[in-house]
Length: 249
Ligand SMILES: NC(=O)c1ccc[n+]([C@@H]2O[C@H](COP(=O)([O-])OP(=O)(O)OC[C@H]3O[C@@H](n4cnc5c(N)ncnc54)[C@H](OP(=O)(O)O)[C@@H]3O)[C@@H](O)[C@H]2O)c1
Image (cartoon, rainbow, N blue to C red):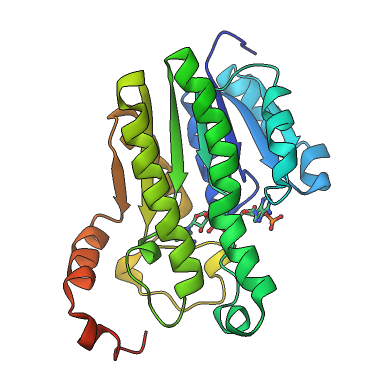
């Protein structure tokens, strides 16, 4: 176990992408703070003992409920060591149809994918700004690039998150704090388990985690995964609104 290695805080480490990202950073020799709101996960051993011996790192699990905004400051302050990297992976797809009828569902989608991350990442950012070091990684989505009828609540929250990360990157550019925006396309996870995904445009969490790690090392600003999505989104953004509004997707 090592405490002189840098710490990486993963918010939403129990999700499928969160798990893959945690494994990638463990392999790279980061000590890990893994968060979840599931007490069983916090108390279970998972494979983390394994990681500690294999990669000579320290791994601890912490309770974090993203929607309990008031708890964020204390949560961050109580971490035994200050993280060098903070990754916001948690998210909630929600149900678009329900969100149209029930503001509670819309609010949950917005608050999970946007408000909660603004709160906790600002706390981390303010700390990193003072220390003149650090990296913030936000998992947004290609869904945030243009509003579609089938998921515009989730898409608008992700779009707002993308803009937040862009502004934060600019604010911290001369403070030696790097901000990476990740825009995955389709990834095979619990979140998309009910969807039929096109093979060519779909990736898996391990592949994404590898791309995220490489992008952080290269200090990339925005990562599209898979890269083909960058081209697709260019085309999607270019569609005139009078045609786009008629497309049923
Ligand atoms: N899968 C895709 O195709 C895809 C594409 C683009 C972007 N993304 C983004 O990638 C990220 C990870 O998604 P995933 O596919 O790995 O989904 P996932 O397996 O469902 O993971 C989402 C995680 O977020 C956690 N979470 C949700 N609400 C929370 C809250 N209020 N407090 C604390 N944790 C909360 C979930 O915990 P619980 O299990 O306790 O609910 C879960 O561990 C999300 O931001 C998602 O929007 C995914």
